[in-house]
Amino acid sequence: MTQQHVVAAVDGSLFSVRALDQAAHEAARRGAALRVLYAVSDRDEAGPVLASAAARVRERHPGLPVETRAVEDDVVRALVRESANAVLTVVGTRGLGGLAGFVLGAVSTRLASRTRGPLMVVRGSLPRGNSSHDDCRDVLLGLADDTDTEAAVYALREAEARGARLRVLHSPAHRHTTPELPSPFSATSPGQRRQATLDRSEEAVTRFALAGIRELHPSVEVDSRTVRTAPAPALVEATRDAAVVVVGSHRRGTRHGGHPGPITHALLHGAHCPVVIVPVG
Image (tube, rainbow, N blue to C red; front, top):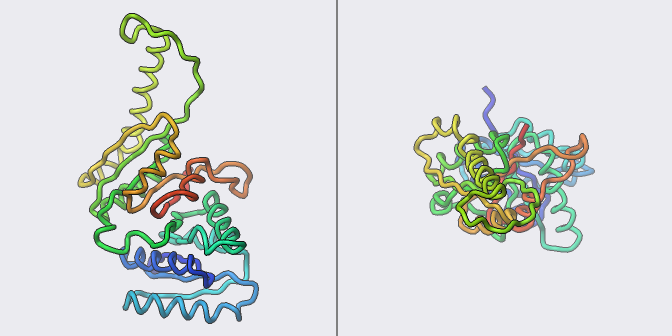
């Protein structure tokens, strides 16, 4: 049986070194191999960067199987292919600024809506999860609706593996409603009754999305709440105390994947921990 593997994308930049370190940690934690990928126009250019990456991983994780691979292709196309068979694909989200930072940041955004398997985007100056303390931080799940089952499964497994609590933030879409005058009787106006029904429906989404898979991970403590206003800022703020945040990627737009939704976009630009994007549907 072929060993499971984690894919790390490198290009010699500092941001990709941080992603490499995170990918190596994730591979070691999962008992998987690490595949280091460099997409270039000329394979001869890749040798020094890949050799340096492999040496860094072997120094920090002796015994971890490491494979290096240079591909002559667009980096997004190459990573989309690789993500189909990887347990996790890891990239960074920004570089040192200027053109390189802009271009490399665009890679993570394009991948977010096209990945075929779980994609981890490493943010911040240092990768999270490289110590037992960080592994015990909460796993955060951004739940949009009851179709996010794949993301919920990933988040529960991640929390169980880390011995951590799972925090669920449910952020339903809302229609604009015109405020009405309060009724002198409790919850008797049509608007109040509609809102009460909506509240119950929204709270049921989390229970429904986790119902079947929750029984497979009984040791995981789950804390959930619904965010009804400004869900993107609320989820970004909640990442301050999380080891990782998990969201589902619904394929929008063109056959090439379109663009990530507003919450995923906000996390890619503002999260305080690594972001894992799980393809849904």
